Picture (cartoon, rainbow, N blue to C red):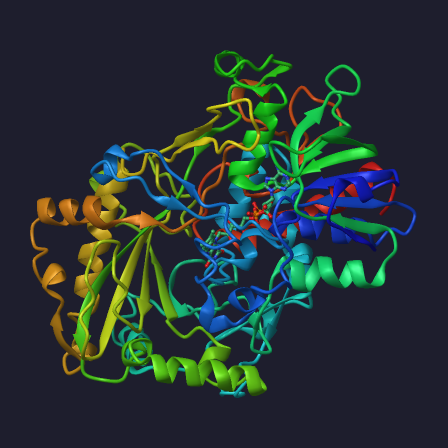
Length: 576
Ligand SMILES: Cc1cc2nc3c(=O)[nH]c(=O)nc-3n(C[C@H](O)[C@H](O)[C@H](O)COP(=O)(O)OP(=O)(O)OC[C@H]3O[C@@H](n4cnc5c(N)ncnc54)[C@H](O)[C@@H]3O)c2cc1C
């Protein structure tokens, strides 16, 4: 296929146009291109993933470094009342491969309950865990770490597949990782060991898998889209070009897109003979729908956009997860001294460049993780359980082998440190994304409404207490030297709540702004096969369709949904 960098170069007609070459878009476009009889154009607003900044994407040690760069849309949230009025940076990938190129690489499918809820909410049993297993295996393949460390007993080979996305376990194990596992052995009732958190059983403690294979980050660009572009003539990519409007080609039928490279540049229109598939992500998708008159009619009128399909839930139901860390000084080697030694860091990158080995060939900051539920008699559950089911977590503890500062905290300069990150997995706060302008190049307003429910703050308080209790068990006695002062100061619920509101930040997992539902009286934006309600032939495939925040990590679920969505589209057009 051809890679265009200017819309003026595009002269062919296509069967399918995929808006956004991100995590989901790259999968859908690649799978559709397996049918030689159809043609596909992917339109991506951002940059190439294999350009000059590609080391920020593909070197595992540099995960996180793409944030705030040219690879990022660089959004900001509105001021958050639940976070003492703070506004947060809100990164999203602005690159082929989308957020799979700048994320933290954690690959965690989440529990079977999560997918079974998707099936229930949509009324389509095809979304259940069991029905999706073929797509789960089609997406991912487990690989050994570069040093071929013996990982026996750290994962279950039977729950992994044969797909292009490569995943694996850390090459480097630290003392605190061993203590996490030892704690599961000594306290199996409180903290059970889970051989493979990707098995559909999403509860308990175990070894973390990341989207890294053969020492390189695996993205939807490197494992799906680029190989397709390199080998097939029926798929093209248009870079540096934003879709600014979905064009109504017949009543409520949107088979064309309007594009431009910036607000001052000329716009062009392309028509798809079969379907337009929107995969612009949780921020981009509702923004584009609203710019096209699909959304809450009254709100659109405020920015001068005429309503075409009044769908009040477009941009609504925004959910996200927060991360908060606690820190301890420890008696044993961690990654902390390495991060504070520029010479060692540079040497690791040089070794990696030379032969893809060493500490830079993995990202060993977080190797062990635990997913937990509130006790069943917790008063927080009196009003109902927001988790997807009994094997879905309410909160998470992740074990980080460094001092991981919360925004605004000053790190120490000496010693060895570990941190525990807490995450509320099943928040009930729901916010929104709305337009502030009819200009597609003006960022929409992003208001996740973090910590605006008693459940969310109560669950975070419980998670902090569990983290402290976990490292107070006997296996940790000789290892923990002392908590960091801020962590030591947390005793009462009020102190913990103040700490949460002062220091929590986004884990960058927004979902649900175009959520799936079975019937229109339940609201929602797309139906069971991801077709936009009230529109003809317009589909959404990305994290925005999720009904709720996920109990695992979202990228795995997005890949899996995109794999099935590709088959739904193929089946619609007789391509299966
Ligand atoms: C910093 C960070 C860390 C994360 N860490 C993890 C993690 O460790 N594990 C995990 O599972 N998840 C993680 N996530 C979340 C995960 O990466 C996302 O949920 C997932 O990648 C979303 O996929 P998507 O297809 O919905 O959107 P994206 O992958 O973001 O793709 C959307 C694409 O559409 C393009 N686009 C948007 N609007 C337009 C338009 N109008 N025209 C053309 N193109 C457009 C974008 O540039 C982008 O390429 C993280 C995310 C971030 C940002």
